Each structure stands twice: as structure tokens, then as C-alpha cells.
Image 1 (cartoon, chains in turn red, cyan):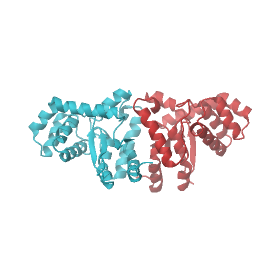
Image 2: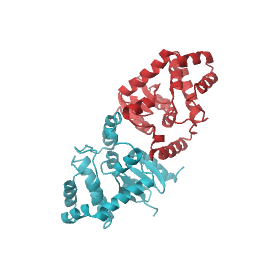
Image 3: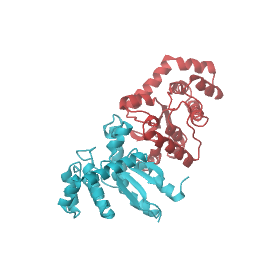
Image 4: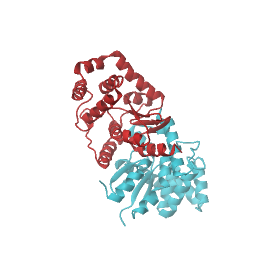
Length: 200
Length: 200
């Protein structure tokens, strides 16, 4: 099997959520796996001196309409939680803590966290919400609670974020097929074609 | 025939150029015309407090790679002129001056100006280049030269730009199907589907 596709996303990103619903099927169609790599988009905004689209004049109202339209086209629910756009440190830490033990369980947790935000409209910025979602996934609450405070887990998320920026990640979702970069949920069709043709 | 599709673009936009090669065929497939409406993206950047992607850290190098990849996929040439990203007042003024007389000729001029930038790598920011391109289109040089200085022509471009911003245009290209907004060359497939289904 070829190298996994790198799937970078921020837990607070509506397009990250929409891409998360499609990326594994897309990868598997080409005999690949998708390596889910949440990062902190806020760090990209600092480097690029930009802001979340939701907060940018003109882009904000367009983006909201566009997210909803893309979700309707996919036939999936999309709601924006009250804390949107939100800091996703707690979600990212829980994910990497679990990924070190069980990658498949970490993906399931990520799916549940994205659904908590964008389907159920819950505030995933709050560690308490992350603990509740993890609990519903059968994870031990005390262990997750400790992980969220663990310095090495925090460091792991920082390193993933720094590594993403070093590779040129400039938004969420961001996908690498081998070393070819693709930014945006609206690049998935192109990722599909790139995998099919082996580039062009 | 239904209402034309509004095709907003800045003459300095590589994705505007790529969309310009596809928009008329797309519109005609659905029994529509495309109304070409160049505007000044710089005015959007002022309102949105953003900058051209080419000048934004991380986004700049990604964008250049993405433009070239999109052009290769379409099988069309793409070069970035030395003045890129450039102020496109002269091109926009020549366009609207001609559009008031002959819409079809104005589209041809627009195509020639976009090709001058993105195929031939010429500096369309310079009025002299616009005059040369117009001359090659068989337009009278003195008349175009006068138009570029005409206060009512300048005002027309300003009004188009202000009107675009009032409608929510936040980038180039930007397309309205009736009042449904679509931002980006990578939304053309969705525009096609929207026209086919009458929305969703």
C-alpha cells in the first residue's frame, strides 16, 4: 500500500468537517489510507496575518452561505456552534493522546467531536464537552482529563501545528498526496483526479 | 432567455483568467449569457482588510502552484506577468468604455487583455499596453487613449466596483446566478450543477 494521504484540519473548520466525511472513502478508492492530522489554524493566521473567514468583512456572510450550500449538496447536516470559530486545543490534545494508543479509535473520536460541533451545535472549545464526547466513545474520563493537561500531549499538538506550517499548510482542510499540496474541501475532486492520474 | 449570469473578475486575477476561458460555454450550455463585469479587487481588499493571496505568507507560494496546476489541468497556458499582482484600472476603463458601445467587442478586448497578462506575460497595469492590445483589436488608439482619461468612464468602473461590493463580491472571479453568489474558479462545477438543478 502507498503512503497515506495527510489530512490536515482544524476541529473548528466547517470545511474540515465536510472533508472529514469524504476523505477516507476517497483515499480507499485509490488504495490509500488517510492520516488525520488536526492542527491549530490560529497559528497559521498568525503567520499569514489573516483571520478566520467568518470574521472577515464580505467573506464572513458568503462563507456561511457557502458552507450551508455545500452541506446541502452532500446531503449532510451542518450547524454552526455558538462558540464558532473556536479554539480547538482540547479537541486536538484528546485526539493526539488517543492516536498514540489507537489510531482508529482516535479517528472515531475526531468524527464524534466534529459531529458534536457541526451537527449537534455543542461547544467543543470547552474541555468539558470534549470529556463528555470522549466518555460517550467509551474512553475513561479521568484519563482524558489528565491527557488534556499533559505537557507532552500539548507539545505534540504544537509540533504537529508547527510541522504543518513548515510544509506550507495555509488553511483547513489541507491535504498532501505524497508531497503535492491541496487546500480546501473544494479540492477533493482534484485530489481524486490526481490520485487517479498520478498527477499532471 | 433567462437573466444573464454575472461574471465579476479583476483583470489581475489568474483565477479570473482561468474562469474567463470557461464561463461563456458554461452559461450557453444552460441557455444563458455571461455578463462580464470587471471590477477592482483592491477595493475589496480595503473593505475586507485583506491582501492579494500572492502577497500573503504561506498562501502566496501555494497559490502560484495551484494556479499552474489548474492551468495544466485545463490544458491552457498560464504565466504570471512581471507586474503581478497589478492595478487594473486602465484595463477596466477600456472595457467599460467599449461595452457601452459594443458588448461583444468589449468581451473580445477583455479576452485579449487577459491573454496579454497571463499568456504573453505583458504588463497590463501600464496604459501603453492596454493601448497596444486595443490597437491589435482594431480599435482607434486616440479614442481609447481619451477614454482612459474620461471622468465618466473612470466613474463607471468605480460604480461597478462599489456595486460589486454591495452585492457581497469578496474575490475574483465571483459569479451570480440570479442572486446566488459563487466565489472562485473552483466553484464553476457547482455553478454548472446549480443551473442544471435550479438550485438545491
